[in-house]
Amino acid sequence: MINISKLYCGLAGESDDLRYRREKSFGPIVVYNCTRRCNLRCLHCYSSSESNQFSDELTTAQAKQLLSELADANCPVVLFSGGEPLLRDDLFELLAEAKRLGLRTVISSNGTLLDSGTAGQLAGAGVSYVGISIDGNEKFHDSFRQLKGCFKAALAGIENCKKAGIKTGLRFTITKANSAQIPTVFDISAKAGVRRICFYHLIRSGRAKELDGQTLTPEQTRQTVDTIIEKTDDFARKGLIDEVLTVGNHADGPYLLVKMAKETKNSKLKTQNYELARQLLLANGGNKIGEKIACIGWNGSVHADQFWRNYSVGSVKDKIFKQVWENSTEPVLNKLRNKSEFADVRCLKCKWFDLCKGNFRFLGTETGPEYWLNEPACYLTDEEIGI
Picture 1 (tube, rainbow, N blue to C red):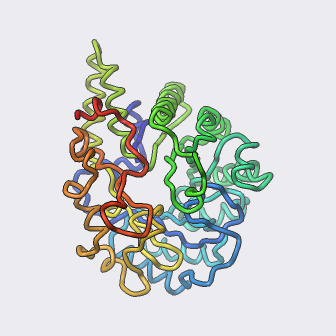
Picture 2 (cartoon, rainbow, N blue to C red; picture 1 turned 60 degrees about the vertical axis):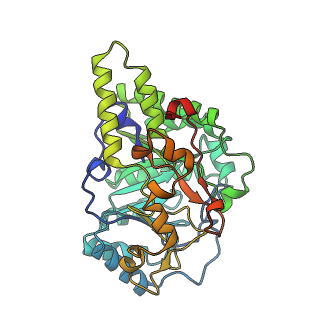
């Protein structure tokens, strides 16, 4: 995650200690896709979730054992995702177990099932944050998620979470179809009283692979990130936002520095801001998938992150999580943890490599070198990266 509001505007973020601590003694942040079921059918869904009941989900006992193993692995946050996590019948039992174990829990939801009673239950279970997906204005959102009325239901879910005292944020995945909706999403957040927005770059996983032509060109990506930066700065000055992050493309960090460097001329304060942002990005260390970010699927499969459904590094049904995660001979984990040796050739020549580390992944099922690429692609020019 690239914290635009912190790096560009100087706003403190709730997770700054995790994000910028140089000594990272904690275990991985874990996305637990606790179910594949969903009441919507979003066009960009990375898990290809559907309304069907799937028989291979971890049982309640297995899921509780998993939570115990995550606590033993010093996991700082467990993100319950899906599908739609609220469709898992034993969700509140699992949240209660996580609370007993001292695990911090957050929820990723489409918001449509968050009535006042459910929001109250989440608050009682100790859930510290709920991220709710919004894709644009009402017409676009309902069309993209293929259910009329789901936009209003999501806004009602946001309001119910706020009333229950749960911090709530918006989640937005950027496509060609909705990139122009970004200013609207900022306005939606302000009207709803939401002070955190996460903008996700599209990764071609799950149904997103079928979204022909929806990946932004480099120039479109630059324009989109510029819009996010400008709106964040405007909303921060007006006191309307606390935190804005981009997710999925670590080139956003170097791009932000390039932009800030152009603004430092004749301004000592801006020069100081640039240097602070650079140091924070170095402390963060760039892309941490397969290191400090992990994903566990509904069937117990372990992945480098939630967008790696195509490849599993092991299963918690066969071994405890730490044994799977600390397997130094697993080829994908080995590459992701040794990017200075295995990263894209262009990345290794880049002057920003130590604070970015690229977006190295493969989208097929083969692990041969010819299948690895930067996904999403880097959008900086050769001149900007120093080659």
